[in-house]
Image (tube, rainbow, N blue to C red; front, top):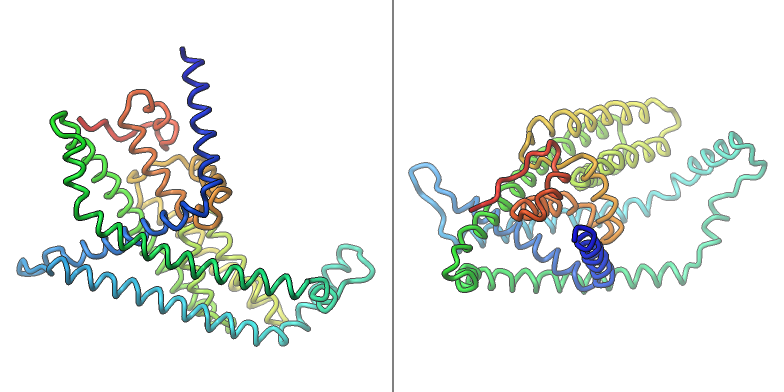
Length: 347
C-alpha cells in the first residue's frame, strides 16, 4: 500500500509540474493578478486600521488610496527604468573602447592570439531577428499587463462573495472555521515576509545608491532600483545585486579602486543584511529549510522564469502550512521546515 501511495504521489507531482510548464502562458497572468490583488488589498487593510483617537478610513477610500499608491509606484519605477535604459543606450559608445580593452586583456590572459572586436561580435547578431524578438516581447508584455489588470479587477469582485461561498461549501460540517484559520495563517506569514523583505530591500537599495553615487557610478538610481527588486530573489538575488553594478564600475573607470569600493563595501552590506539581519528579524516566522528555499528557487525559476524566482518563497510557505493540516502530508511539511516544527493542525 505504501509503494502504491508513493507511486500515486509521483504521478500527481509529475502531472502537476507538466501542467505548470505547459500552461505557463495561461497561469502566469492569473498568478501575477493574484499578487497584485494581494498587494493592493493588504495595503488597503493597513490604511483602514484604526489610528490615533480610534479613527479609521472607510474601506472604499483606503482601497482607492492603495490603488493610487501602487499605481504611482509602478509608474515611477517604469519611468526610471525607461529613462535609464535610454541613457545606457546613449552611453554605449563611451564604454566601447574600455570594454574592447578589457576583452583584449582577458583574451591575452587566456592565451588567445586574436581577440574578437565588439564590431565583429555585433556583426554576428542578426538585427532583423533581434528587432523581431524585441517587438514580440514588447507586445507580449503589453498583452500580459492587460490580462493581469483584468484578473485583478475580477478578484476584487470575487472577494465580496468569497466568504459566503466558503460558508456554503462547508455548511454544517465544522470545516469553515478550519479553512478560515488556515487562510488567516497564510495571510499573516506572507505579510510578515513581504513587510520584512520590503523594509530591508528599501534600506539596502538606499545604501547602494549612496555607495555608488559617492564613487561616481553611472546610472546609480537605476541600479538602486534593480537592487531593490533583486533582494526579493533569495540567495541568487543578493549575488546579482553585487555583480551587476560592480561590472559596470569595472568598465566605466580606468582603475580598480571604484570597482573594489563597490564590490567590497556594497558586497559587505548585502552579505550582512541577507545573512545576519534578515534571519534575526525573520526568526521562525517562515521556518523554511534553506535547502528547500534554494531547490524551490531552481524549480520555480525553471518553470516560471524570473516570476517563479520572486514567488518561490511565498509558494513554499503556503505549501508548508497547507501540508501541515493533513495527517498524510504532515511528514512532507516536516521535511520542508527548517527545524522539524510545523504549524499545528487547525481543529
